[in-house]
Length: 418
Ligand SMILES: [Zn+2]
Image (cartoon, rainbow, N blue to C red; front, top):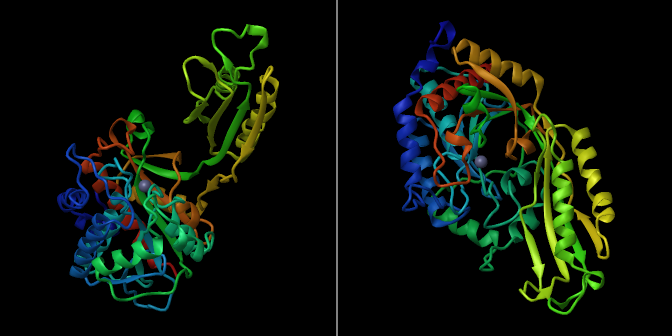
């Protein structure tokens, strides 16, 4: 149901939006239907080139900045005003799907196409942005393009990062720009009026609750720990229990107890031990050293602090005859999205007749960095089974189209707000 002043959202074309997802998925296509389009590979460059071609059909102008973020700009009546920006990323994990990142880019393109077809002019310019290297799996860190854009990652450091073959970002970027054939460059950074990002949820909540749309309240915070347990290497056959300093037994006790303590009734806290390195990792030797990682996430800063602070004391308490060291990586604080933007997105969902649920994001997104420099918000669509970072990632064409209608309405409102 499309009402009154939002008639232009009726120009959002469900089939075109869907077909473009399938076309993009051809760049880096895997035999099982998934996508391997890691940042700054030839496939990434070709996908960008396709996008620039679609964008030029509706008169958008393309430019790239020094870290490889690609901007497609629709002029405003007052083109000197700060733009409204929307977008996401086109790079994927090595075994990625068709929608993570691509949806936010294609939703933005479809919104601008709908506005163009409805001949709707806006006061502010609107820019569609493709953040470079969001996934960070080829070149760490994640969200490289958006964190450099917002000044949180030094450009030199980003350009100097290398992949496992020793290729530098600076060189991979030159090669990508050459293939993409975007000649215009722009200054890194800049001010914007607001930022919106559409994305698949990458979790099961919307699907389980039966909502086609999520208005995202924020992005949960993350604490990373590495725990090193040290014991003594000894013979598995000859060492009595009392003489053993078995680092693996101690680590297992720690993991078991930490997992029990880090399970909240509401099931909001996320606790993961994803890596376990055992040394010497031989069947007949008592393990002398174990390292394991802890990934801990919660949308609320105080809860994240509370649970994270349990880890080191508990590990020391349970070390037994072993010794233990707990190292923490820098914390990623939880983000709360701008309240006015959340309200605007809810109003636009109402006016487009799309039921929605408010929910926090479990995964990190480029919008995290943008929210530090401009009012920002996100829209989520359900993805089948909550699966993402998986070649079987799937979404419903109707859900994608409805979220894109809401995005279109919100972009128009923001771009006329002066
Ligand atoms: Zn993503």
